[in-house]
Structure formats: C-alpha cells, structure tokens
Length: 111
Length: 113
Image 1: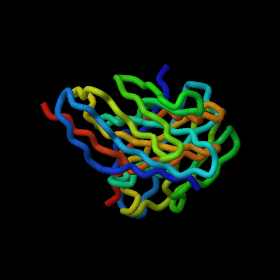
Image 2: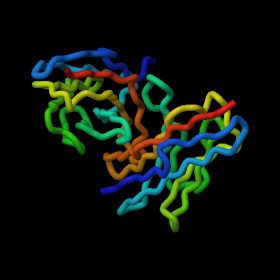
Image 3: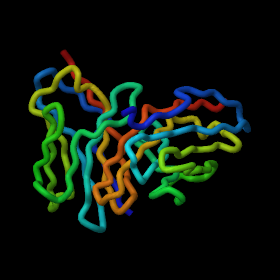
C-alpha cells in the first residue's frame, strides 16, 4: 500500500523567510499527490495537487510543490512566509480510491 | 453551497454509550469518507463509500459502522464507545474520478470518558 512520510513534525520560520516542508512517498503506481492545510479547529483544505501533468505545481497563497520521481519526493515551498500561513500541513498520496496522509507538519511563523 | 457539513461539532460520551455522527454533502459527489485524526498520526481512514449503496473498510474500521443513506448522506456509528475512540472525526467527499480530490467537513470532536 502507498504511504507518506513527512520529515519534521514542527517547522518554525520567521515572517518573510522561505518555507520548506518535506514529503516523501511510496507508491506502486504513478501517484497522485496532494498537500492540504488545516487551520486551527477547521477541516482540511486543498493547497495543491500533482496529477502527472507539470512536475512543478502551484497552489494557493504562494505555495508550490515539485514532484521528483527519482527522489520520491513532493516537498512544499513558499518563498516568503506570512503570519497567516501558520497551520498544520498534510501531504497525501492517492491510489485508486485510497488516500493516505502523512502525520502532518505544524508550521509556526515568528514575527 | 454549504459543501460538507457534520453534526454534532462536539460530543462527550461515557464508555459503552452509542452515538451516530452525521455527514452530508451538497456537491453531488459519488464518494464519501470517514477519517479520524489523532495527534502525530495524521488522518486515518475508517470507512469509505465509493458510490451510493456501497461501503468498504479503511485502515481502522474496528468499533465503527457506517451507513450510506443516500447520495448526500454518510453516517458513522459507534455502537459501544471506548476511550480509545476519543478523537476528531472528519467526513470528506469526492467526485468519482482518478484525481480523488477530497473536500472536508469541519470535524466532530468526540471525547469518551
């Protein structure tokens, strides 16, 4: 079965700094990959998704992720963190009708 | 459109009590899902319904039952609640298709004493 590993349960950056959240996956077939964001006391919202088109995927709020097959990675980046980006971020991989989520990375943004 | 709605938002149960979590979506999606979220474990799939009239077990189905009442509604039942079922429960839905993008409800926070 497919699986996702998110490196780092907590990431802290200063406002305006680069954000890098790491995600590695395993999948027996070409994967569909997702990043979701969860703000406090809310459900998950889709940030972006990879569906085998362009390897660099742009999402909302300045986030983007690059699919690297050779590294089985789908890391999420944002060139400039905002206070409003503080949230928990989940990477997910989908095969057929089965989506598996990583454990999540909590992003803190310091003023 | 309300998207995915869940009731109740909060619930406290005693061990052994039963309850049903309700979920409804107004996006005409075929597939619906129930997840639980626990600290450090991400979301784990309890049950899903690929289409109306079908349900299948996910990663952690023990202690739960589901009903796909119609295309809009998918309920999750705890017959005899246990403290290990203390969690936040999310319902999600997706259109039938290979991308499987899921849309989530706001969650139900359940505490079992």
